[in-house]
Length: 397
Ligand code: PMP
Image 1: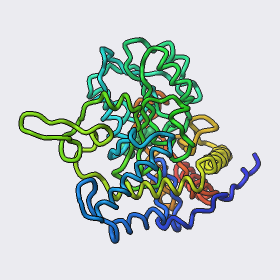
Image 2 (image 1 turned 180 degrees about the horizontal axis):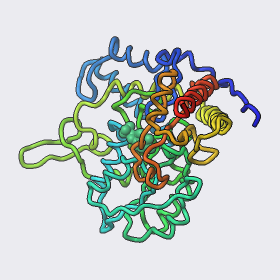
Image 3 (image 1 turned 180 degrees about the vertical axis):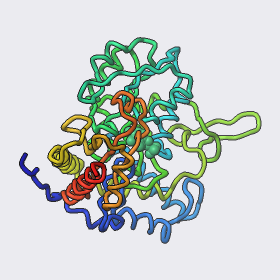
Image 4 (image 1 turned 30 degrees about the vertical axis):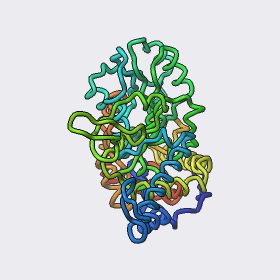
């Protein structure tokens, strides 16, 4: 085979990420490294602007509140929504738990998920007492929407699918999924954790009812995430945590609550997390998500070709996966592969990726996963390939 084409970073943003100097970070699907502009926004928020939100009458608190609400507007705008439909959460996990625990079931006690879901989109439904059905995958590792259509019944309250798989990188035809869900009166929740950092998402065009994502995979800090929900659905959902900031009036006899999104944000929120998220949203929008996606697609294709060239490597997922390449070196446990790669200065994730039902479907205990970001380039793939050649040398010795 010919040597694969080398992609030079068209985005040229690597030097904006101080934490990856001299390091091949291929674990952005777990959590993204932060560009300097996000780090600066966080530092300034603490060192210059910090105060509480929604409570203080003094000027600093008012301006911090304005920054917090501006972050909400930016995050909702990123996915084509309105600020009053966007609830800040700790992350996608909390966002999905919120829906699972507060959405009125309206007599429907089943949820339709898929075989590739992250545990965050399985366990909350189980804890909330739903019966779970799981849609199988196509041989390519995509959610089989024909099967979904056949499986969906009027007992299903909600269909919950990953917009992009965190293991296979497969991209859901979300518009079609919405049509299927709505045809039986079910709602569609999309787990957008892996989609938001790399696709230009518009929830209105997609026809989703809920959309969940985490800031930390979008170059923002941990501890801040978003649940977008259609306003009329959020209005029907009761609060799930009580405390300050979500009430209208408290007496010992009765408490009344604020409208969404405040109703779902009990307690002092992650103020600076929201500021960091805003900076991250501005950063990806300036680069353009289309450009990030094109860049990562080129890297995925280069990486898959390079791993095929090495030989003795099994690749999972579709050829056109979004930013993610899962693989195993034949006969070697993924943890051994990742440990040897670590010695070679390459960080990949190894394990079940919080997707044990998907590992069962793949019939493997674990995979290694290389995942790309805007800062990734061909040097990362070259280092990965050198590391895998070393894995093969060690295990054939
Ligand atoms: N869904 C998907 C597809 C993910 O990749 C992740 C994070 N690995 C989650 C949900 C959970 O996100 P968090 O841990 O940030 O809440």
